[in-house]
Each structure stands twice: as C-alpha cells, then as structure tokens.
Image (cartoon, rainbow, N blue to C red; front, side, top):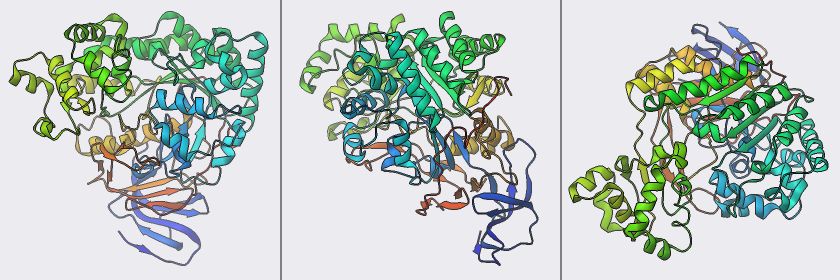
Length: 583
C-alpha cells in the first residue's frame, strides 16, 4: 500500500480497494473519492487527489457505529475515544442507561462523579481531576465537546441527571410531584432541542449511586417515565434507551408493557443492552426476543443489543464489580481490607456467600458463580506467581479443596487485589449457532460494547475487529458483507444518522481500510494511561490500516494523526426520525 500526491481535483482518493458498502450488497473492486467531508464519487476514477491511497488487496468499508458506549467523560481527556477508534469505530452513542454528566445543578459535580464511578466503573480521581465540571445545561455540556473530538459522538439525555437537577437530594428519596414531573419534562425538552439524541433511563437493581442508594431513575413512577418518553415525540431525530431488571433476569409482563408504552408514547424505537446468549440459557434468550415481538404486536418497537463476540470480563474482590452485587456479598466486601479479610476467613461467612451467589435473588448473576471456571490473573504477591493463568478448578483439585475456598484463599493472600478472569461458558458450537440465528431477528442489533465504562473490568471496544477476524478466518457464521452491514448501516439506521453507515455518493466520508488477512485484536491487557494513573483494560488492533472521519485521516497504521474532525451529533440536524416499523 502506498500514498501519493496527484492533481488535487479531490482531497482524498482510495484506489483499487475491495469496497463493502455497508448495505449488504456484494463487494466490488473500485475507487472512492472524497472532497471535504463527503464521498463524491465511486467507481474507476481518473481524477487525481491531494492524497491518494493504494487500497489494493485491502477492504474499504464504512466506519463502524457503536450504539452503546459511555465515553461521556473520557472524551474530555481522550478525544480519540480509544481503543474504539483504533478498531475502526467512527461514530458512537453515549448517555446510555440514564447516566449523563448533564444537566448539572450547582454543587452536584461530586455526587455525579461518585455515581458514575460506582455504576459505570470510571475511576473517581480521573473524573474529579480531568473534567472541568463547568457546565449546567445539557447544551453547555455538548458545547464543551463540540469541535474538540476525533470521532462522531451523540448523546442521549439521562434520566438520573434530569431528576437530580430538578429534585436535588429528594431524587433518591421519593417519587416526583406533578409539578416536578412537569419541570423535568421541560428540562428534557430543552436538552433535546439543543441536540440530545433522546432519552435514557434505568430501573435496574444493579444500579446504585456513590452512597449505595438506588440511582435517581429507579425512584420514578411509571407516569414520570411515560411523561418523559412522550416529550421525546416532539423532537425530530430522537430515540429511547432503557435498562430494566428484565434485561438481566428475563422480562416480567409489566416490564414488557412499560417498554412498549414508552416506545408508543415517544413514537420512537427503544433499545436495551445487553442480550447475553448461551445455549445453557436458550429458553431465556428466546423469551427476551419474544418480549420484543410482543411489544411489536402493539405497534411498538423494542430492539435488543447483543455482542457478536465474547467479551472477556475480569473480577476483583477489591474493586467494585459484579461480585459485589451478589446477595450478601456487599456487606462482606466493605470497610477496610483487614476487616474484609477477617470476614472472608470465617467459614460460616463463606458458606453464606456461596448460598447467596446461588440463590434465586442473584438472578442472572448466578452465571458468575462457577468458581472453578475462574482463571487467576495478575496480583501483587510474588509468592502466588506460579498460580497465574491457572484455573481455580485445577488449583482446587491439586489442593484437594472446595473451589470457592481455594479462590478465597488466593484472594486473601493477595490482599484482595487478585485479578480473576471468568472463563466463558457460552463458547460452545450450539451457543454460536443460536447467536447466528438471533442476529437475523428484526428485533436484534449488534453492539453494546459499554466502551468507556467498567474500565478495569472489561474491554468491549474491539468487537468490530474480533468479529471480522471470526467472519473471515474463524467460524464464518455470516458473510463479510453481512457482518459489515450489521455494524454500520443497521445501527446508523436505528438512530437515524444522516449520511452515515454507508459508502455512497453524498454520504459522510467515514471510512475504514483494513487488511482481511490480518484483521484481528489482541486480548485485553492493562494500561495505566488514565489521568490519575489508574489502570484500564485495552486491546490493540491488527490489520486496521486507515480510519477516516469526515474525510480526514484520523488513524494511520494504528497511530492517531491528531486530526479532530469528529462531529458532535445533534438531533434534528444530524439525525432524522425513525419509523416504529422494523427493518
């Protein structure tokens, strides 16, 4: 691959690439010409360009669209939204699950930072040190990012922020009065009118604020949720997103009804994250799809997000994670480390912890209680070095011990700092066939990386490169054209993104050029590159040659160019209203 300078009728031309246009149509070899931020020509182009890139042997496709991220904070210190952009993501949606940094009442930055640290796993010190916290309205927040980012980013308006801004401390104490609901509705309307992409909310039992109380949106009545959803209908190019208990544990009839009511009130699609797929839980998977189908019979549209790859998750007794949400565990894993260790050494407490992890109250979290499947990761105790990368099942068998006791002994010897890697139990052929089947449902969309959140526990950002590697050189469950369609035009269409998700004349020049022979990603690794020096999990891409955002080369052979050509997406200007009819 080479780059040359030609007669500059165009700003950029990519010659001789295998073009996969994002529509699902068969690939073809050709040239793509760009002027400014738009694709102007496709085919065999005699015209020259200021920059010409030889795409021979490479695939050119639209930039990937990630529909569920939490980059709201990270973009302030990392305009490139790494590692997502390094893996070809050119457009991302933030403000999900009811959690946004605005609107923000005076004096509420500390509360908001602690809430985000707890529910989304963002290091508190980074939030406190790296964010200016100098906004009040949602429009103020958007303005702080506009013109300063290297990716296209749009943000939903979070229920928790609106409720806190209107109700103050009462937001996590009581239902709202009619006048407070009216004020919240007006605030949401103002936020949408300046560019918010829609409304997001949480009613999930897993979401608690920095003080351990249910987050503000969990205190809302159904009437409040529907009033806010109804406001969305008055604003062009908007949408809904939610997370309920049923997203994790299986929907109850009342939840299905509320989700449908929200969609109908807003006259907009609503999406939720994330549909986990395992052959061991096939009945629940099908029930989740059936819930979306049930909403459709009423004229609503509910879309489940699901990942096309298995995302490695790590756990730790020391840092807040899913383990802390198991029934009876939070009290054990609270206070100073010495007190926690003393409790963990008590056999009676261990038995209660095991029972809580297996109880019906644990819901979907029972899936993380297969202790033998955990692999021992990094930790500070050098005496445990010989246990790294070994499974708890193997170590317990060698010691002749119970698996949970073995795990606890290792963690205690490491002052609770051991990184634990659960080995997925959903990597069997039947699970993958189930995934292939549901991907074709009109009620399912690929995405849900949670990128920008849970930084020390997971790294979902590389799903485009991992999926393409699997499509090209692995299981080959779908064609290359179909895989790219599912990660480009389909998410773009759900959010009504204008001119994105396709290679077409007049479309925005968001492009990825990659090598089909090497496209892949490394496993998750730790990096200490956050503003406060704390660690996060990242993944490096293979085979991504160029990433172009709005016509400007943003990533070149894995390195950021420094270009900040990203658009701060605003509803009505950069989005159009989407029908409730499924694709």
